[in-house]
Amino acid sequence: MSEHQEDLLKDIAIQVETIVRELVEAGKLKDGQLLVIGASTSEVLGHRIGTAGVVEAAASIYKGIEAVRIVTPFIPVFQCCEHLNRALVIEESAAMRFGLQIVQAIPVPKAGGSMAAYAYGKLAEPCLVEAIQAHAGIDIGDTFIGMHLRPVAVPVRPSIRTIGAAHVTMAITRPKLIGGARAVYDAEQRLNPEQASFHCE
Image 1 (cartoon, helix red, strand yellow):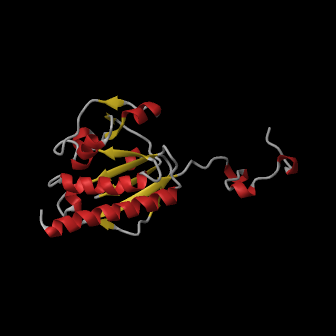
Image 2 (cartoon, one colour; image 1 turned 90 degrees about the vertical axis):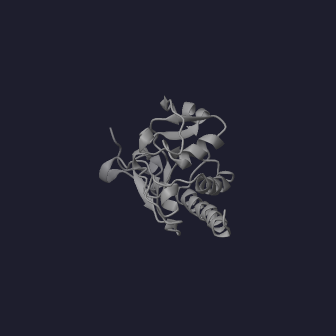
Image 3 (cartoon, rainbow, N blue to C red; image 1 turned 135 degrees about the vertical axis):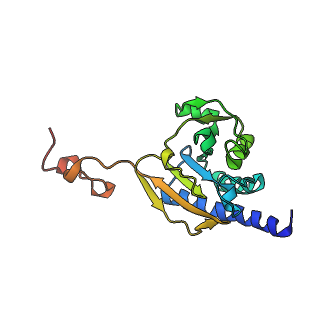
């Protein structure tokens, strides 16, 4: 590996760490919440998605994610490519906790993608699940993670808009607002029940 390639891989890890930290802060992610990651290592290295995946790039992305996860232990979930119907790599214990549908396949770079294949090899007890509803997500290389986010998704603008040559988008999610005109959404606007001038039902 050339010195230029080594520097690029170091930069990727640092940049990913930065944007993951920004997302965690923006979404106030808590321990045990789901963060879905879609990443095309081909796009990171300047190639068309799905054509030139590189495990070393996946390792750098993973390293950046782990640097933040150690501090805020969210659950990382890695989206596979279309050849595995965008299934997701996750720890089996987390899949069981969330009641997720486990499916059978082992991702490899040519069927699943380099990022998912690398993550599968790094997790303690990995499995694949068919779908999730994650609390937040990062998309590196326009892999389209929206199908795996909870409603309602809220875009987060990262300070770094590209990782290598790959376009970056991020989102957090929030609960749906219900109740109409009389509903209160801000905790600071709550009334003491004894002060309420009207009551429902």
